[in-house]
Image (cartoon, rainbow, N blue to C red; front, side):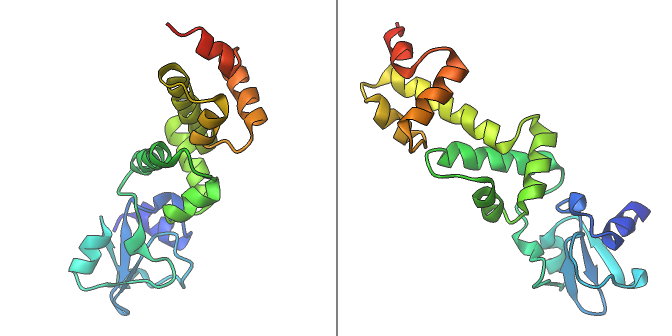
Length: 181
């Protein structure tokens, strides 16, 4: 085990979650580095690259930190890609940071920080980008009313949709539709 891994275990470093997992030989349980369980003795710790590796060695998942439910594998970029895929798939729903974090089994704070670090924008900004891209497509390619387009892309308030659309494009949805080829 590397010194940085041990420091991550001692400090319950959530930034190391998904980078590695650790098992305690005396209990037969494996955890994420951020687990709040009592710090084990260093000589009893084994380190694993994945939750599957730990289970293959006969370790059981901790019931406190649930490492087998970790959706990321390695660097934060993998988790960011999963957040992006989830947003792309469900942008029309009432997504929030709490909903995304719950779905991906991580804290909202960690999700927000990791996503911003990896992509340069917040999950909310990315969600708005996806919604605006889809709204533009629907306005160009369909005859749906502006109200229907707003609802389809996840806005429950037409006025809010129009305000956001105008601030992003410099045009109202109706003006945008009128300027299509």
